[in-house]
Image (cartoon, rainbow, N blue to C red; front, side, top):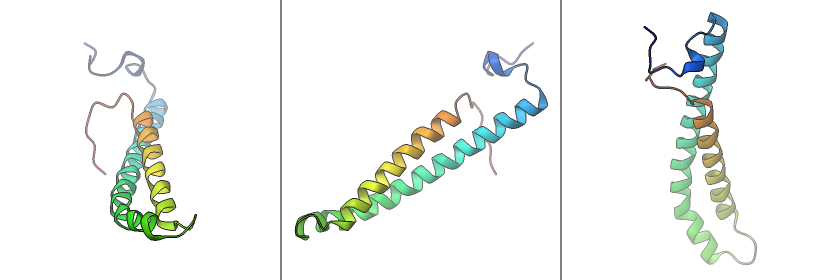
Length: 94
């Protein structure tokens, strides 16, 4: 009997296709890790970005721009990682 937890399109894959699928999912896991790490750093940088936005004159807000960049990278990596890991229903460790 087929494993009903596996999506229908993944039940009859060749070994090469399974290897490609695993590589895609591991790449997705790496993107999720990068997204989480940049989110943590962005949260810490927010402390300085608020002060920078308040006290820096004119358009000179380097910490604010750095914070915006970090959150953009974080969101991009989260979305990309979830898209690459689609169909994963098991936990794996490196």
